[in-house]
Image (tube, rainbow, N blue to C red; front, side, top):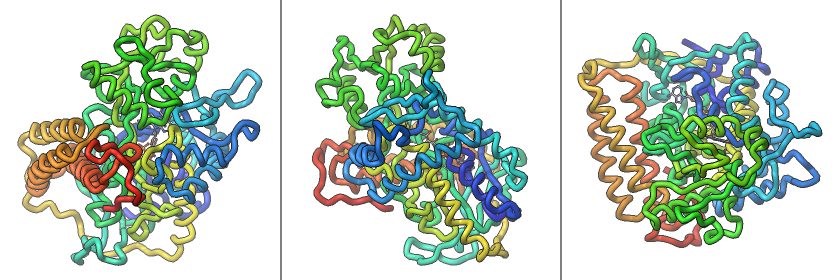
Length: 531
Ligand code: FAD
Ligand code: SIN
C-alpha cells in the first residue's frame, strides 16, 4: 500500500492531524491505522475536560502558562508552554465547529471546571465524559472526508528506515529516514508494508506497563518502543503520572477514574480515621498538583497499612453532582456506593506518560519524515509533571502543528521503492500463550513494586535486573515465533519499562513525578534525560 500521509492512531492527536491534512490537500491520500476499534483510545476515557483560557475576565494566558510551569517543576520548555496555551483556544473553537459539545451554564456561557494546579476555573467539559464526546465528534467528521481511509485492527510493528534496506543504523547515524511501516493485519495475520511520504505517530500512552492503571489495554507504548528501536530520540520517560483518585476495585482492570473535577467541585480526601489529610501536605490541599496529592495518598496508605483512602462527596449537592458526574454516580451506584451516603474508596493508578518521543515545536521527531503528537510525544509542555487537562489541548495543538509542517514538505517527497517484504523465515506458531501472559504480569508487578510513586536506587537496580531477564526471554520468543499482538505489545512494554527505569536511574534527584528517597532534593542542574 502507498499513501501520502500515514497516521498511526485514532485518538484526538491522530484524528485532528488527519482531518486538517485531508481538508487542506483533498487530492492527497490520508490513511489512519489503528490496532483496535477506532474509538478504543485513551481519548475516549478522558473525563475532566480540556483546559483553555476562555474567560478573559478571570483568566489570562499568563496565568495558564504559570500554572503549567509550576506543575512541571522546572522542566517545562517555556516556548512550548506558550505555544500550547496561546494556540489552544483556537483549536478548541475548531473542534466545537466540528460538532463537539461542551456543557454550558444556565446563562449560556461555557461552564468552566477546576482541577489540581489550576489557579482559576478554565476546564471545558462534557459532563464527566469529555473525551468520549470529542472522539465522537472527530470520528463523525472523519466519515465525511473522501480522502481519508480509516483502517481498524491493523497493528503497526515497526517503522521502516535505512536499517531495513541493509544499512547499519545507530544513534549516531545523522539522517535516519522513515519510509513507512510494517503492519500486522489482525484479521489475516499477515504482515503488510505501507509505504508513505509522511508518517505520524499518535499512538498514545503506556499505562499498561503498570499493574494498576486508568489506561485501556491499547496503551502499551508502541510508538515510543518503535522509535527507540529505530534509534530515534526518546526523553523524560521517568515522569509517569499517577492519578491520585482511581476507584479502588480489587481485580478490576483498567481502573475506573474518579475525575479530579470532583475535587474541583468540593470533594475531600480522607484517611481511614476520617481526617482530611491533604491539609498536612500542601496549602492547596486537595487541589495541589497531582504528584503532590498522589504522594500524600501513598504516604497515608503506607502509614495506615491500607490499600486505599477515601474521597468524601457526602456534603456535595446531589443534583449538581449527578448533573456534572452522571457516569461516576452511576458507576459507584452499580457497585453499591451511593456517593451521597458513602465515601468512595480511591487509590493512585498509573495514568499518563509525560515523556516520550522527543519532538520539536512542529512535532518533528529526530527521524526524517516522521512526526509524533499526543501522549506518545515529548514536546516540552509537561516537564516533570503534567497539569491536569492539558493533554487533550496539547494533542490538538501539536496535531495542528504537525499538519502545518508536513503539508509544506510533502510536495518535495517521493515514495521509497525497494523496501523488502517482512521476513518471518524460521518462525513458528507460538505453542504456549502463557509464556507471554505470565511475562506481562511479571513486568507489571516489577514496575509497580519498584518503579512506582516512590523509588529508591536499590529498587531501580532490581527492576533493571528483572527487566533484563524478561527482555532476553521475549526477544528469543520474537525471533522464533510468528508475531501476534500479544507478543508485540509485551515486547514494546518491556522497552518502555526499560526506558522508564533507565531515565529514573539517570535522574539523581527528586523532581515532579520522579521521587527517589536516596536523592530527595532537586539537583541544581535542570536537564532533560534523552535516551
Ligand atoms: P490515544 O487517544 O490513546 O490514541 C492512541 C491510538 O493509537 C489508538 O487508536 C490506538 O489503537 C493506536 N495505536 C497504538 N499503538 C498502535 C499500533 N502499534 N498500531 C496501530 N495503532 C496503534 N487528558 C485531559 O487533557 N483531560 C482529561 O480529562 C483526561 N482524562 C483522562 C482520563 C483517563 C481515564 C485517561 C486514561 C486519560 C485521560 N487524559 C485526560 C489523558 C488523555 O486522555 C490522553 O493523553 C489523550 O487522549 C491521548 O490522546 P492520543 O491521541 O495521544 O492517544
Ligand atoms: C481527570 O479528569 O481527573 C483527568 C484529567 C487529566 O488527566 O488531565
